Image (cartoon, rainbow, N blue to C red; front, side, top):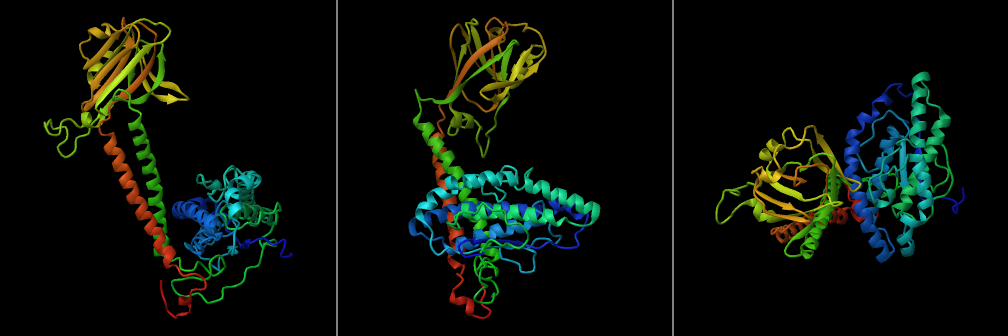
Length: 490
């Protein structure tokens, strides 16, 4: 293979023999601890890939510490999948390490790129790789097996893809004959190799486009043979990043720090989203109310009722009736406004809010529907058998707040702690009921909630960046002179 044809992602594996006829049936259970760790490692992979992307755009270089970590995640994932549904190629349990284990039968190496194109970094991982993603989806069953999926979400491995199907077929043959069919092994390894090359390209680790070529067999014939590490592995460090010797300083402590940092960064993004949404809602007030949305509901029965609305916010003296604190629900939710408009001139409408117990007693024996939620912009309901109400709703005498009449009716209610239920009916107690409902609330605590979310978000972001930066800065590169010091530990 000429240097021009060689590819900088190398994937090798050797088929163990003999293999247990039965162990493959429970390997999916045995690797659960690995999957838990990998879920966090992939969170770090996605975060650090975004950091690397910015660094490539600014400098044209992939930060070496991040490169070593991300290659280690790919390597760890490949070992686990080779053991489990990705191949069932060994009965040796995968090691918990980012470093290469020379004694393990599955290996992955990536040549470190000295320079990367800034322009390609903008388009290769989402646009140029689309044809490759289609092929990988066929191999893996609809997701990038490595959890990359263009950096948007965690992917799944194998599923009902060709890799998983063939691996199971090989396992069934193994169960029946005691031998793993080598032809299937070669084909499965070729597909895995293709997927891993695409993962390296999508992960910005190389500018070389993955070849449309199925290099089958355990030995990778279509990649560069990477040089051995320049120095022997020292305690606490590992060897050269991306090469076969390990991960240049990625000790357990630093891996845990990186994972914790990635989790905090992800949490901060969620908090920023929630805080930003709260701030935006604050700017959308009309007449002092924040619009909570409009939806249409209908039932052939005599009434529509909400699920029980629970407002139990007592904490450290809240809801005590103190004139200095007041009711917690009122402080947080404020005044609720509900506007109900009958649909298709169905006549006068009634809306009321009452304690949940009183409303349930009124509706006992009445045919009504409880609104459970919305699916595809349509209400979902639970029906209750019964007959027409014995008393018109306005005459029930149970309502804390109510409104009735023709056209749009508006109910306002100052929220209080407790269990509550909203009921909508035709004013004369007839059926069917078909209405459009708009909800709004003053939400006096919204600015404080938004501020709190953003402050906590910034704190999580700062903590996450710190936990990520410390291991990156302290992990020595492959040419770090500290590697030459005997007995030096991370």
